[in-house]
Length: 90
Image 1 (cartoon, helix red, strand yellow):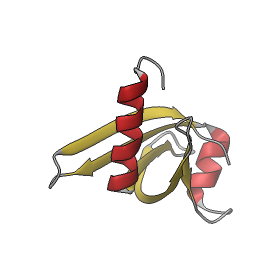
Image 2 (image 1 turned 45 degrees about the horizontal axis):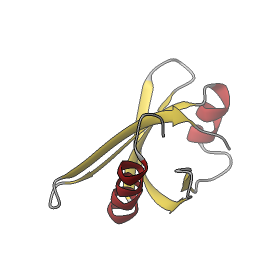
Image 3 (image 1 turned 90 degrees about the vertical axis):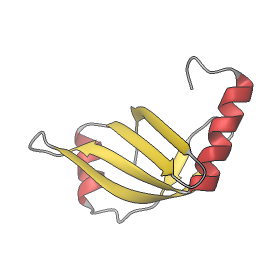
Image 4 (image 1 turned 120 degrees about the vertical axis):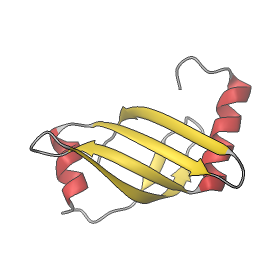
């Protein structure tokens, strides 16, 4: 995670672990944005996030065509909001 201090990075990972559900945005093959809820299945020490999906899903095809993605997490009760963008791989 570029631009974050280690303590900020650790706090961000913890917020993601606690919030659990993300909105994943990919670029559809026709160029439209597609956002869908996903359950986070893991957060590695380096900040890599893990999600599970069917290997023939549209999101897999979209990531294979353009691997730039955006994620957002929100927990209104805890007043926690996280937004991140980066690259995905399948």
